[in-house]
Length: 246
Image 1 (cartoon, rainbow, N blue to C red):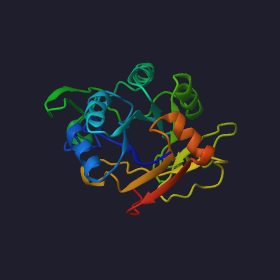
Image 2 (image 1 turned 30 degrees about the vertical axis):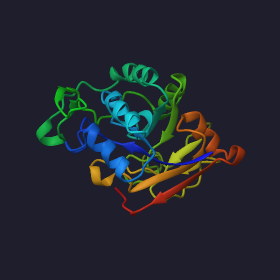
Image 3 (image 1 turned 120 degrees about the horizontal axis):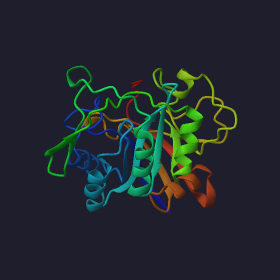
Image 4 (image 1 turned 90 degrees about the vertical axis):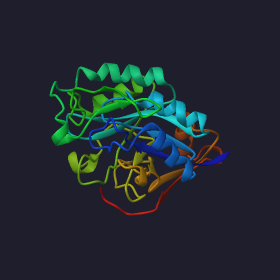
């Protein structure tokens, strides 16, 4: 078993709310400097940047999970994690048509740029990514699992876009292995789910402000599930450097 310090909720410059400074290289350099051993890229409703960050992260010896932050019809944020690029991209392809055809307005929402490993802009995402999919929360959870991913409700105790703020409850019959919280303590209703903390970084300096320490064999969704259940000495522990609510 290893103790793996993970920050599994990081936005790149593709997310309009993410700073342009959130390039793949800057993200990986920040993770290395803060001794973070596993990261995940979770841009809003898109995975166009995951492969570039994955390449740099793995070259630097940083574990990597492919991810995305989906926004459901109820305005709930749901994190989706995958071990491989292909499965993550298949989910993204499946939901892209469910994203409204509203164009991004960079002066209002921010740029949605796609950059390469050398920080050269190679494209722009035309659709506004910070929008709700035409997909209900329960449907989104089921779809992530259908494509082989691990669904984790994001910042469940946050005032905006968290499950408890938007719905007020965990839907009956929906069971999670992990749920992300800002405080390290989950509200009632999550059953046996383990609490997970992440930075939700939109700026390089925010990376690592909240992390999860997994005791497990490797950075994979299978091991995360086993850790959430405490199987064979595995464990999940939140570490919070600063207590921001946004």
